[in-house]
Image: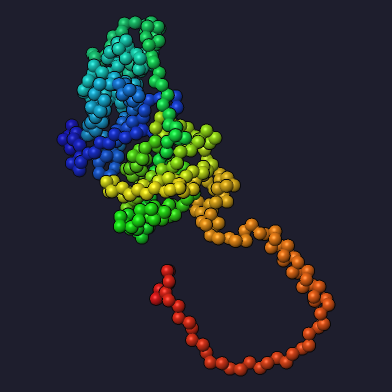
Amino acid sequence: MATEESGLPEEGLALWLTEWKTSDTRTSWLGRQLVASIGRSVAGELGFLVHPDGQAVKVAMLDVHPDFQRRRLAGVLMDALYAAYPTAWINHGWRTTSGSHWWNGYRDPAPERNVHNRPPAEWAAYFDAVSVAADRAHNAHQNDYYGLHGHRDALYRHGERLETEAALHAASFRPAPPVRVDPAAEPLHGAARLVLPPSVHAYVHDRTQDSCARATALLEHVGHGNLPHDAYWNSTRQAAFADAHHEELTTLSPPVGPATHVVFTLSPLDITAVPGAQALATSVDFTDPGDLAVGVAELSWRQADRPYLTHTAAFTPAVEAAIAPVSAGDAGNAYRNRYDEEGFLRPASRGIAQPFADRAAQIQAMTERLLRGRTAWARTSPAPTPAQTPVPQPQAPQQPQQRPPGPGRRA
């Protein structure tokens, strides 16, 4: 193999351990992801599930971008997983064809922690012994079919039928207790990635200006009714920023300007009456297409290339806002009354005074009385005497009045 194909590129490799969002409510294991980035591009990803006590890991997905394959990147990701959980059992599951060929050339750093290599009595409390046996049989078939060794010497030789294996160890499996976010007891944090107009960008990132005024301007620019509906709402602000960073890495086309990552912090809310809402281990997924009224208690934002400079402003009391519906047709009446088709506040909702809004009936009755009085006066009054039309006299032209320049006008 050529050296330039076997080694990693010289521009640098970054490994990032972050959350892996999964809507599978059948498991209480925590989703995690190792992301390998080269420059501003994702080169590979390793998705896995971790037992709540951190002592068991199930590999779910290992993928390397075609541009970075055959450079040992998959091995780097797997080695990093072993290093991140140095005492945990590792269950690699079943392998695809390409995965079998890769595993055949991979050096397992800790084969003694691979559940395929140890008797079920040691790990059956974490993994279903029958499922592990089925995965192991699938991998053995792949190896035989393609003529691969597949580290078969390290595999556990149980010498028992599958039915016997199940009878001995299946009862040892202990499902992890469910872990779910409670939005009624803690705030939620959702992220949006924005490319702001230059003037807005300069103002909201100017640390010499009042932070609350800048947060208000940023929320006005986004629109109170435009909080992201396609984002997971996390239990921590850092997890929300991580979502925005992951979107930054996976964006196909680079932004036309510097990106701003914004995190909306919501006041605690009851989601039991929200159709389609799913409370997960560390986040909430609002899958319902309709809108959802919320309160923004805090706003945090930072430039994508300057994550160490974070701006934060709290709103006391919380600002009324809404998670946007998927489309305008999915919006409810309360949303339509407060926000326009683009999700921005209607004039009545911006606090503009409308002193006659609640006197429509009185004004209508007064108008009808005036019209009736005018009709009666016209019937009883004599016709007016024609008057001589005055001849207009020429006048000197008047000079236009000078007005001082104001906002939006040039001097």
